[in-house]
Image 1: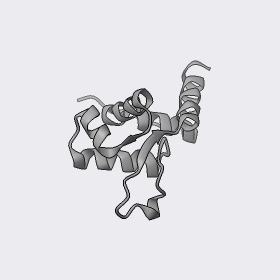
Image 2: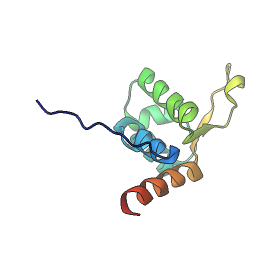
Image 3: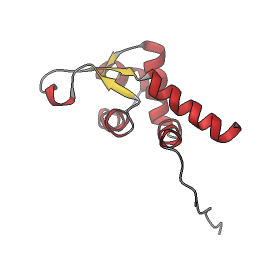
Image 4: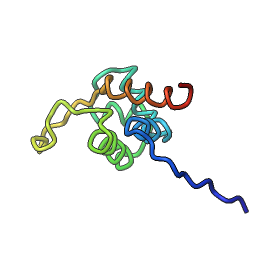
Length: 106
């Protein structure tokens, strides 16, 4: 049996964001879709990434509310009956990439 590595250091927040966003294939697929297609509605993303609706809803919620790498054009509290268009938060994604690169190659 392999003993897991025990991580003893804390990462800067942006490295955690990078690992959370880019280390999960479903999340990365959504980010790539938004990069390639631009602002998109839920249904368009669903068609583009081939996910289940419930899985995509969880992924979008996580990417928007937990780590802030995407945003909807309708504020969270105002979405009753209004569908947001999601877009990539380019500065947040860029900062995460830069932080990970600095940690690994710096």
